[in-house]
Length: 390
Ligand code: SF4
Ligand code: SF4
Image (cartoon, rainbow, N blue to C red; front, side, top):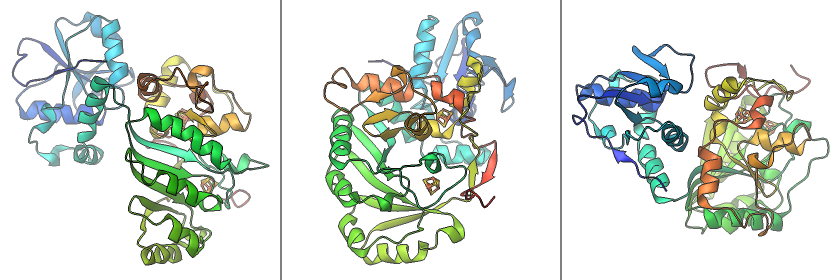
C-alpha cells in the first residue's frame, strides 16, 4: 500500500518543482500551477526525446538524482505506481499527488483540445490515487472475448481475427468461471466490454449479459458490433437492461444494418451508441522488431491499446493483440506477461496488488516488440479495409 502526500500550492517556494509526466495531466498540472503563480522548474519524463513541452524544459527522469531539493508532482493517472516505484528506487521521497491542485479554477481556453477532454474526466486522477493508497482494484475497462468468428475480414484488425483459419466460440461455462475469478478480486469495473470477432455471432451472448447484469461491481456492459448482421429481436429482448449498451463501430456501407439495429434497440429500450470508426492506426505485421528498451517503453507508453486489457479464454492480457498473437501461434507471452484465471489453482496466489501492477505498473510488455503500437498521432489508416479489396 502507498501513501501519497498532497501538494499544497504556496508551500514549496524554495524547491525546484518538477512535473513528472509530459502528457495531458502534465499540461493540466502546469496550467493549475501557473494559475497559482507558480512556475515549475521543468517537466520530468521517461521519454528522452523531448527537449521542451509547452515551453517548459523536459528533463529525462533518469537525471532526477542530479537535481537539488526537488518537489515532484505526479502528473499521470496511468503510471502513478511506476512513477512512485522509480522515485523510491532513486531515494526521492518528496513526491506529491495533484488531486487538490486539479481543483484550481483555470482558464480552460488555454488547454489543448485533448487536455480539455482529460480535464472533464480529471476525477480519474483522484480515483487512481485512491486506488493505489487503498489497495482497491478499480478497472476502467476490460474486454471479455467471446468468439473468434467475425463476418468481416478487416486487413488491419487490431485483434488479428482474419488470421484465424478455424475460429471457435469460447465455452460458456469456462468463460464465466474464469471471469468470475477475476471479478472476485476486482472492486469495480467501469466498462465490461463484450466482443469478438463479431459479438452477435456468439450463441450464448444473452447468458453472459444476464450473468453479469446484476453484479454491483460492474457499472456497465458494452457490446461491440460492426452492424453487418442484424441480431434477432429475441436476442435484443433478452439482453435489454439498464446496464447494457450496444456500441456500433460504424464502418459506413459495411455496417449495413446500423439503422435497423438502432431502431430495434430503441424499441426495446436498449441503449445504443454509434462510434466514429473511420480511422485506425496501422499496428503493422507480427514480426519481431528488436526494439531497444527505450523504444519499447516509448511504444507502450504512447499506445492507446495499452489501456485495453483483454480477457481471452480465461487469461488476462495487456491488450487484444498480445492475446491473439499468442492464440494464433505468432508469439508466446512470458509467464510475467499473462495472468491465468483458468482454474482456482492457477490464480490462487493472485492479489489485487499483483493485478494492479500488471495492468498499471509496467513499462512495456514483450508483445510490444511485435507491434507498432496504436499511437493516435502516427500511422493513420482508413478503418475496416477488407482483405482482397485493397
Ligand atoms: S476489426 Fe472487428 S469487424 Fe473487423 S475483422 Fe476485426 S473483429 Fe471483425
Ligand atoms: S504496443 Fe503493446 S500494448 Fe500496444 S497494441 Fe502493441 S502489443 Fe499491445
